Length: 136
Image 1 (spheres, rainbow, N blue to C red):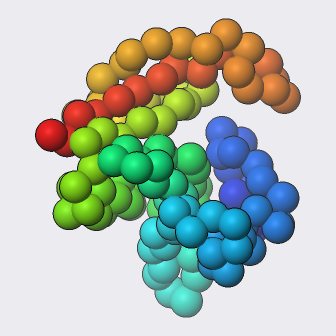
Image 2 (cartoon, rainbow, N blue to C red):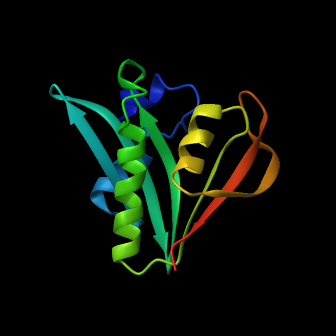
């Protein structure tokens, strides 16, 4: 997952310890990872966390060599099914304003834009666009 994330410019870049906590459940029992593998390699993943009756998508990465094949849609769709089955009322996320591909994916999945955060991202500095999907 870390190698895939390092090659994705628009991904949230986390330290190794943060990824390890997902699988050890140490300190983050409400965080989960969905992973898609093909040809014995991780081709995509989604990390989200649950806070009460809401989920927040924290990171979605698909390998450049397999983009535009629906893997991102599958990952988001699976999270939405999981969130719905657990009685979640909404799913939130933020994305770089310039990340048109991701924004199109989220809008296709039913998310609506609810706001902006100026200078939210660094390297390069950029605004975040906030999205929400109501499940109730």
